[in-house]
Amino acid sequence: MINPASFFNWLKENKVDFYSGVPDSLLKDICAYITDNAPKTNHIIAANEGNAIALAAGYHMGTGNTPLVYMQNSGIGNAVNPLLSLTDKKVYNIPVLLMIGWRGEPGIKDEPQHVTQGEVTLDLLDAMHIPYAILSVEEDKAYEELIIVLNKIKETNAPHALIIKKGTFEKYNLKEGIINSCELSREDAILQIVKQLKGDVIIVSTTGKTSRELFEIREQLNQPHHSDFLTVGSMGHSSQIALGLAISQPEKNFICLDGDGALLMHMGALAIVGAAAPENLVHIIINNGAHESVGGQPTVGFNINIPQIALANGYKYAQSVFTATELDNVLNSISDVQGPSLLEIKVKVGSRDNLGRPTILPVDNKIGFMNFLIK
Ligand SMILES: Cc1ncc(C[n+]2csc(CCOP(=O)(O)OP(=O)(O)O)c2C)c(N)n1
Image (cartoon, rainbow, N blue to C red; front, side, top):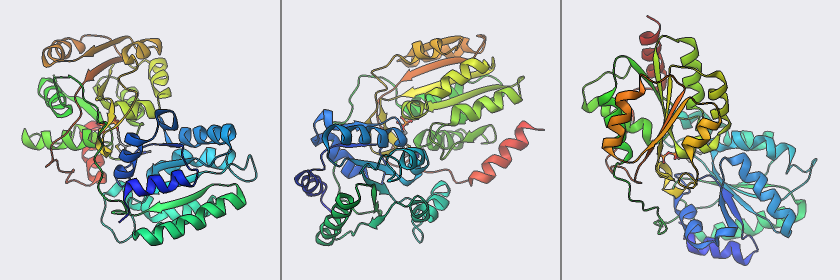
């Protein structure tokens, strides 16, 4: 296994000292080390992986150095356009060292949303003419490979990927974790929402632990899952799934349970909800200021005024709450408000160690959900 500190120092000695990306569970130890040890100006956790490539391109043009961009392989889709129309050698020819976590690696059991992505990861890079090396888990070998990769980048001035398998990095715990004084946890907030819902409210939940917690809460309460669409992948898109549903079934009420990282990833979605103005949609942002599901690296969720942003984008009502009592009050009245509405719930960072994963397949979730909606 590779020690995150020595990997970071090795890169620094080789003039790779700017980092951007979106955190990934397979990369959480190295991402945590970078978060704790890189100067703030040299590490920017991007809104999405495409933005990270663009940030890296800007840094390269300002310094001449090679930046590093990290991402989960599910972020390749977000990065394709800037990789092909910005950094590509037939366009601006900009060097980037890509570090890509290989979820769904063939032969290694993973969640359904990672399986095809894992199968096509190397093919996607081939199709984009981006060379890659699968980084060895053995430290000495890994550094030999890295020398070859950096030489290749120097020679071509173009992006080169490092594919990172599960278990490549030794454990490193984030020191600069976010500590806030919020009362509720994400799970507390979801439990309260589920318990207080009136009538047949339909929920679309975002990727990561939000959907896992919602699933477990239904199990605990002995409630069926058919009114929940668990968006296990597609980070940042659940508000648009909810929008598509809300406009197709205007007589039903919909809630999108979103995360701050997911909201930031595709924030333009807010303007589209505002413009479409579905009266029957409540967009709830569970804001912990972190990418909690993949290691707790910070987002800028606590630096921005989400309700004001929503109102400026055409939402009809927006509110922020911190406590169970405030949440109780808003949930009691929100169904009387004409939407689209946004409710931000500020929560602490963290989750249960024994949190499970949905035991129903995504396709069965969809079938049950559609049967419930179109009956
Ligand atoms: C395009 C894409 N990039 C990265 C990931 C990995 N990922 C899964 S959950 C998550 C964090 C989500 O953060 P947030 O929405 O704030 O929710 P939290 O986990 O804090 O509840 C990330 C980065 C992903 N699934 N898809």
